[in-house]
Length: 333
Ligand code: NAI
Image 1: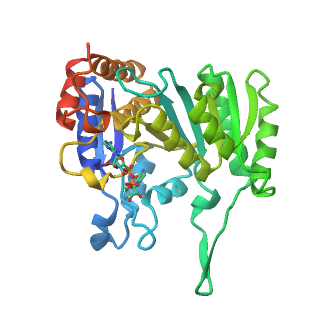
Image 2: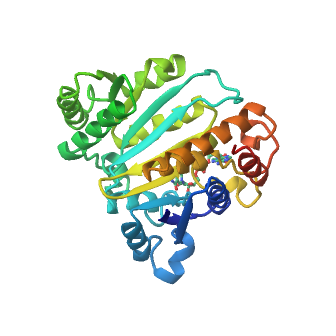
């Protein structure tokens, strides 16, 4: 059995970590024909856009993509390729699990949380304009359709993965209309899943609670911007961005990528931690039905971390991307 999967290596550390993950997948015995397509600033001179149509077409054809990070200029320049892809392919759900790994020095040892982030609207839609010279306005868009879809995704995920509770995270005390609508949809969907506990939490209090007592949470569902921030917080709880996987899922297509960005500060030096994208690839293999290979890769990674000999710099070690990749491959029993 072989699969056709789109690969967007991305920029910064993207080519290094996607190179690593390709070797790991191959070693796990899964045969993937990679359709390699480029996006980001580097392709603008040739295509006039950071997201050429052929990238979208490739994902539409293959249905599944693995993506390295793509740099987005701050303030001015082109719109985020990531945001555009999520909108263009209606990848409405962003799944970001945060699970403790052995051998990583963190405050908590057995974290097992899942952030489900709405992926297509909210302030993150980037609908903004100047009002005269000295004021700017960003529009927060929350719709019933997107809110119901994301909450339904969270409950369906909870049910499928034997999770006990879904928490809807909001700020409806202040944004009574927009977050109020999100909450109304959450309550309505929650009433259809009596077997899963439902809870609501305000986003600021959630941040504090996550730092003080993260085990009170299980699956958390929230609008786009809160999800962006809270999922980085959760990555911090398990040891940093180099360990946090993610998936962008829609009804037809799915793109798997790490939570972290292109890390320009360490790009090209063989220093990047490939474990986030390796775990994202493990999620991708599960999505493809390759459960055994997904588990083989995950357990090999766990064994390497347990042994503690190979860690990249962000984890307090001195191993290179290459050495860590080779250690994982060597540990596939
Ligand atoms: P970042 O995640 O790239 O880096 C933040 C810090 O974490 C840096 O010190 C970096 O060295 C470290 N880091 C991140 N990933 C690491 C890894 N795998 N191994 C070791 N250290 C790692 O966030 P930053 O600097 O805010 O963003 C850089 C660029 O990436 C920006 O242009 C941003 O827009 C873009 N970005 C792209 C994403 C995507 O393509 N999905 C997601 C987030 C940011």
